[in-house]
Length: 275
Image 1 (tube, rainbow, N blue to C red):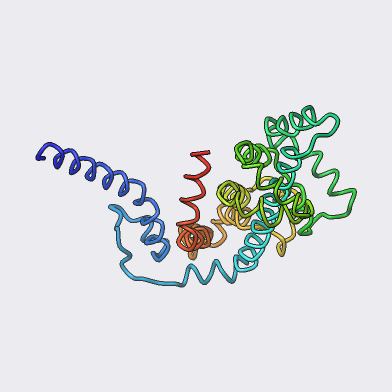
Image 2 (cartoon, rainbow, N blue to C red):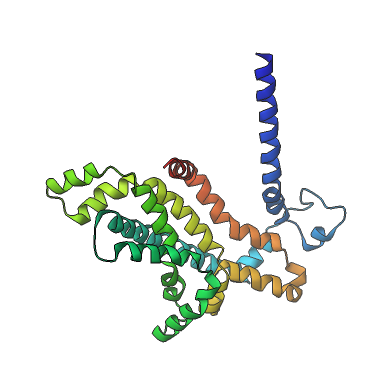
């Protein structure tokens, strides 16, 4: 019993130490967001702010147009995530349930697109967006990434063990293919959809290269572009420059989303791993 207790105590100690190591950068960022620029340069550094102030967060939110960038990032990331999840689920369902000519070559072609580095696709995407006249629009930021081969592959692998008896029973009862997909398939593949949604949302939220190219208008910029511009123009506003304040604003929606959907996130990743 003592041996088991000691092993459990050491395991708990190691886990707590690892958690503190991982949480320390985030805690440091939050506390430093309320420090003055001069205090950030002091040595030795202070853990807690000497004087708490929202001045720097307010400056970045209003003067640096981070409020507009936040709305753009939330709208674009959420829309891309929804379109990617729905399109991946539908395409995977079609490849899993239906037999048609060139089915396998087409599926392999879709999967092969995941091997293409994203910077290679920037020029074709830009030409297409330019031809349609979509520069500096939400269409340019959303549509090029509304389909993802990795999402199709992830959900297809989950559907490989899907009970087809349910689908056959629904067809016998007279359900249409749309009803089968909407009321039977989608509710039973929540786990991979949640996992795919997490990956897609984080990937889109952190995207920098394409938003810089497709939308250079101040009203259409996203948060990563705003962070990059803030770092480049730090000398202009040295008195009010606090990079931690901008980082806190950019990370705040992700923290809120995790706290709200933490159970669904953990369950989705766990169930996808089991499948």
